[in-house]
Length: 318
Image (cartoon, rainbow, N blue to C red; front, side, top):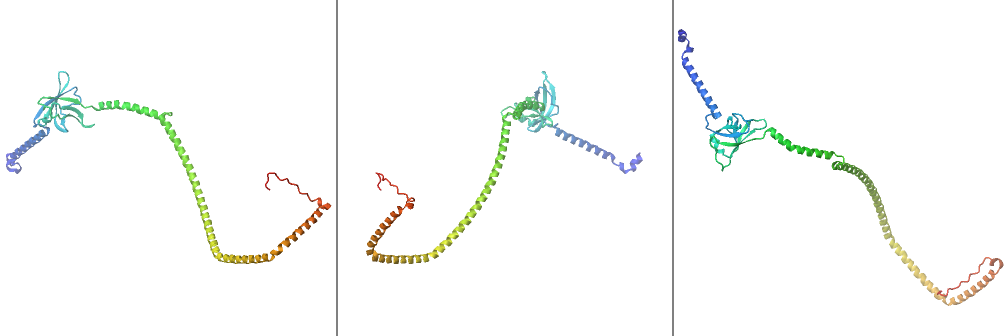
């Protein structure tokens, strides 16, 4: 063995190497332990305070204690007091004690629906005194899911009853809702019929308008033709007026000449008129005598009626 130590170079100074390895391992263990201690707050000054709970349900040793969302300590121990209530001991980092006062409250609740349970301490008012070592604060248990469910049940139950009554009221055939829906259906049907009638009326009106437009167009065409004819007639009259005036003047001249000639003839025949009238009267009397004689002849008088004698009215002016 001594021969191997003297000849094998691997074993030269092995004691020093082993000693150095052991020292490094010990230092590493110390550093890790110190780090863990710092993380766990082992080397941090602590202050112990308490609260009293009716039940220890949901409270465990090592449970985190938080203030405004920051971890400030943990539950260090649970115990029963003389009246069977749970005395919970909290280990709080001393540097956070300035925010915990005599009116602060500890509250147990879950971080979310599936989160861990924690103890939340509310900050006290500025006017209250700071809590001291081994001091006691109030505790209130946050409502659990069962309590919340029960409360929701109690609140929802009347609502469900009202909803049930509303549904029954809506489904009632004689209720206002059903009647209103029926009236709306009837109104909708009547609107549909009215729309059909309006469409028919619009179609008829469209046809009537088209017919009227056509008639108006024909009347306008006829009027235009009449106007054209009148224009032609006016032009013709304008052209014929000079000839008519000329002919009229000639007729007037002829009438004037004829009148003058009649005047001359009348002046020439005026002395002969009395004798002609006398001869005419004598001829008329002779004709009368002849007529009376003829009327008295037998065959002729049968066909001639004697004139009736008319009596004049006394108040007549004739």
